[in-house]
Image 1 (cartoon, protein in one colour):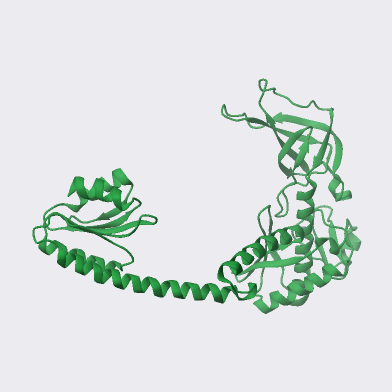
Image 2 (cartoon, rainbow, N blue to C red):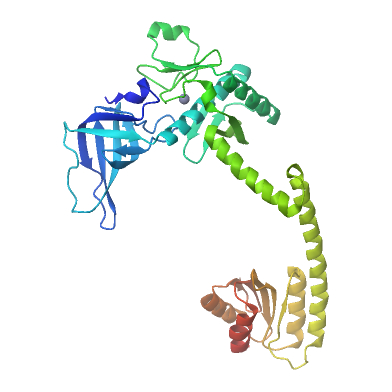
Length: 402
Ligand SMILES: [Zn+2]
């Protein structure tokens, strides 16, 4: 079994250890730029992937650690070694001493998220009796699942309470109580673990069986923020951010909000109404323009010469059913392909093309092959979208085919 140095001191960053085993894993492909090795040590500071938490990062023997797994108490580090001079079968020899250093900002962030989760789950358990039945902590997201419903108001209250516990700077302690002591403790996550049970206690707020490193004091969580709440298997799933991650998110959100506020000339807290107003105005303007274009289109159609062959018209913002009606109208009085392209050079054109004497599928096949147009339909009428300019459409499709 690997000695877990992170268990003794969650704040230690560097260590040395004896190599027990080092082997290539798996055979590198020809194109690979690095060759991976599995390294087992007598002791380590690297926390493995366990209990829903992704593993520590860092350097071992001078090489980046890309994965850390635990099985039957043995922790295996996977390191990535650049391929330069051949591919040595063994990198480190058994018995050799090597040093390692964990990526501390990454680890500390994980500690902030994990302790934050314990505080919140402790409060949920105390106030509602729900268990945390799922936990996932990765570099991009932290989620936890509870086996009972929480309203938005419940979540807001719990979030506030959680931050109060953070500000109270309550010590966070991890210990391995004896079986006798354990019987007297009321702790969460009872069934998850076998063997020596590690209990993480946060004052009177929470006691929980857990294998992961934690901050030593709730104050170090910094801040706890719920990001999303959704229904999940009869209970709820929450995604959260703690500490620096919450600060980084706040920076991004604030800078976006400042920009929207600047664009809309509205105070930051009134930007949603301002954006809604802009959207309503845009929708109304689009509708007006579409209506005008539809009138313009019918004028264009009535102005077509009676003997015009394969007329193709361009418009923008006109609804699909008006376009279909217009194309039907055109095919009654004109031979060849009769089409309408609706759109603009920037967003491309949706189109409907019909014919009373030609097979529209031939034209569809040509447009798919030459212009990757998405289209289909019947011999009498096809419909689709093409990302090409009006000039291109006129030059290559209308002229060459019609
Ligand atoms: Zn935990």
